[in-house]
Length: 318
Image 1 (cartoon, rainbow, N blue to C red):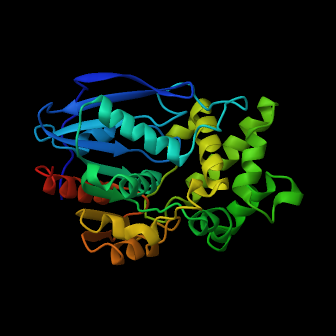
Image 2: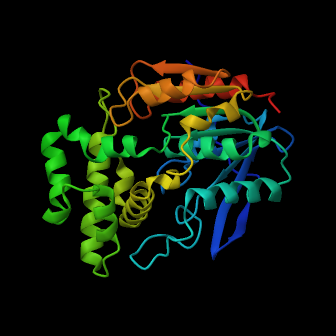
Image 3: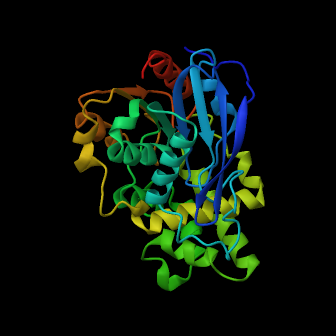
């Protein structure tokens, strides 16, 4: 099993003005002359973490990490009901990735991502296949309403008590509709007590559904009230709008990626993201390889190890 590389600090970082009042934090780690790679974090709204730096061989890769609009160290944060979200869509994020690539003078790169970052990576690659040398995608998603409806409604069959508590937090008249949209409305309420309660309940459900893997524990990150607000607000914004992909779904356009080599990595215990999404994408993608981690959920040690193995195999891609 591959082990993570030693902790490393950025050799360069900064903020990029991408328009619409947004400034993205970015950093580069590893070898300035190495194979360019970019990591797309999950959420939406999770922000890039320090630990992901350790998944890339620092002697081989020039790794670009950044925080997507509204989260992490990017500004402004989507941390209150007054946050403007009209210019925070999948298409805006794809444009940001291209601006960052151009800003850093990169021609092609290895594109990697996790969870929501997989959806974003696929949408980006389908629009800019000439910029993608290879892909490593872990905890596979494709941003369909079927996937998000599964998480917000159908998973009551797995966690009935927890789901009932989750649904009870929205007005009764909205409980049979789109729960992500109902939560988005709560998170837009001018009363901070309402938004804080909604963020707490949304993140509690996130902790519940994320994995059936043995030993799965709640995430300590949700103890941070600002992160709760940002994460819940951005996830519900994207999910209630079909991840802004209703007019450009991922699966029917997989032929655009036919010549891009890729590794898809997914956990058998990922109950919130059933394996069929990864399988269907793999079947439609001749250049892909699917790795199923038999003891992993929506992350975990073996998934990280599989991702490192896959990234190591693309060290000379370009």
